[in-house]
Amino acid sequence: MSKALPKTPLRYVIDGVALESDRDAAGSGVTFCFSERGGGVSRPPFASLNLGESTGDDPAAVAENRRRLMAALSAEDLLPTLVRPRQVHGVEVARVTGAGEVPAWVGQGCDAVVCTVADVAVMLLFADCAPVVLVAPGGFAVAHSGWRGTRGRIAARAARALAEELGCDPARLSAYIGPHIGARAYEVSEELAQDFAGEFGPEAVPTPRHLDLGACIARALLDEGLSPERVVDCGLCTHDLVGRFFSHRAEHGRTGRHAAVAFMRPDDMERALGRTKEL
Image (cartoon, rainbow, N blue to C red; front, side):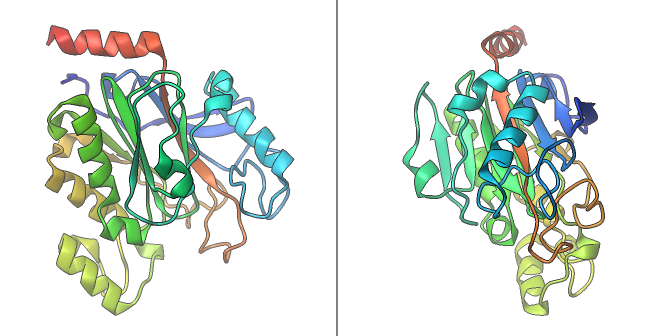
């Protein structure tokens, strides 16, 4: 296990593109980011770095926005092989374990992707749902966790799949919970709140009608075997920070999508695996 503990990603603005990023997450060799909405070319209501192709935005603008984001990550060369699954608010996990591989679930619909291949970038999209990035030397996973996915423990399923692919204990993994709608802004039915409290404990519902997705995701990851010090919540609410992030609820469903993106470069991957062997 890497001795480095995960830290809250730092905020960068690169050529106008704003993002929270870590370029060697917890010593894993994985680069990832949570993008913001600034620095793109889309017009309202998608202004401006909208990365979602099914929002009604101009496809050419979306393509340019993706190029700008990947360029900000020094990874524009990975655009041709970008893995962008059809997200369905489910619990299926796709696995990318070979170069040029396109798992069936990517096209059929999935909400998490595990990757153990260098020079393959994975992108999932969000606008209030919680992005989760899991890393360890040799691989990563990106998960989309709305209330349905959270109830189905999609992040924990992704953690289990990543640990299986790497042949490691889940305690070796580090997790980052990205910007999502916070509990104060996320009012749900009392019935749904009670269901989540029964599944994840009272911390899931700070009031009888408000749901804390981050707390539920963290609980699921701990139940899967991750260590508490290896689970980091960025603490950014998309609803309250709608000037920085897209929010489906705050913008009444007419909005763009920001992203979680992760990838490994061969040299970074090899260094991370070398550090692991030395421990």
